[in-house]
Length: 386
Image 1 (cartoon, rainbow, N blue to C red):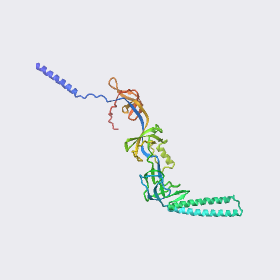
Image 2: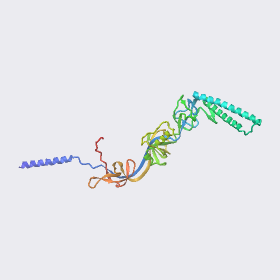
Image 3: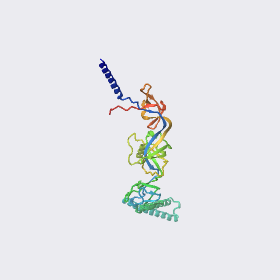
Image 4: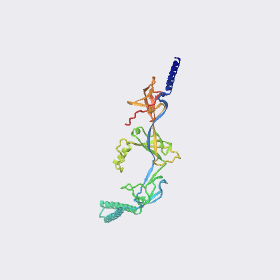
C-alpha cells in the first residue's frame, strides 16, 4: 500500500511537471503594434516634374537659300552678338533664278515705257498744251517712280541669289550669318555642305543653330489640374535636379499656364501653327505648364539645358500640430477613424477630424491627444488573387 501511494504521488508530479513544461513552451500572445500621436510641423506640397531650360534662346536662320560653305563655331561655343557663325553659299533653284531674271527684264521694260510717257508729257507741258497739274502727267510720274523702285528691288534680290550679298531697303543682307544674341550654342542642326532654306515671307526657313543664355535658367514642368488650382505666382518652391540630388535650389513661381498643355496643342493644330496633332483623347492628359524662376544658383554649379528635375511647391504649412502617419487612418463614408485599445483590452474605432496632409503624415485636429496610442492596421489576410 505504501509503495502504491508513492508511485501515485510520483505520477501526479510528472503530470504537473509536464503541464508546466507545455505551458512554458506555448507562444505567448504578443501586444498589438501601436503608433503614438506626436507633435510636429507639416506642409502640403505640390510636385511638378520637368526640366531646366534657359529663358532666352535664339534660333538662327538664313535669309538666303544655299548650302553651308563654312562653320565658324560649333556646339558648346560661347559667342557674342554679331559674331560670325557660318557661311551660306547661294544656290538658288533654277526656276527661282530664271523667274528673278525675268522679273528684272520686265521691270526694265515697264520703267522704260513709263520714262517715255513722262518725257512725252514734259514736252507737252513745255509747249503749254497741258497744265502742271494734269492728272495723266501726275499718273505717269507715279507709275515711273513705282516701276523704278520695283526694278531696283528685283535687281537686289537677283544679286542676292547670284552673290549672296545685297542691300535691300537700306539693309545689308549677307551670306555670312551672324549671331543674333550672346550665349552658348546649345544646338547645331547643319553640317558642311547641307542645303539651307532661306527665311522669307513665303517660307519659314530651317533652323541652323540655337543659342541660349545659360546664365538665366528656369525650371519648366507640368502639374495636374487639381494641383494647378492650388497654385499662384510668387509661391516659393524648391527644385531638385536629378544630376545633383543633394543640391536643392530655392525659387518662386513666375509663370502658371491658364490652359492645359493638351488644349494649347489642340489650338495650335486648329490654327495651323502645328504641323501634326500632338494631343491625345485621354481625359487625364491635362497637365498645366509651370515655370519656376529666380533660382538661387551656386557659382560652382554648372547646369545644362534639359537637365531633368522636380519641384516641390509648398501650398500650406502648419507648425506644432498633432500628426499621425496616414497609413493608420481608415475611412468609412468619408469619415476618418483609427483603432485604439478600449478599456476592456479590445480594439475599438475612434472617430477623428483631419487637417493638412503631406502624403505621408496628416494633421489630427480633434479626436486624439498628444501621445495617444493608435493601433497599426493588421496585415491583410485576403489571398484572393482576383
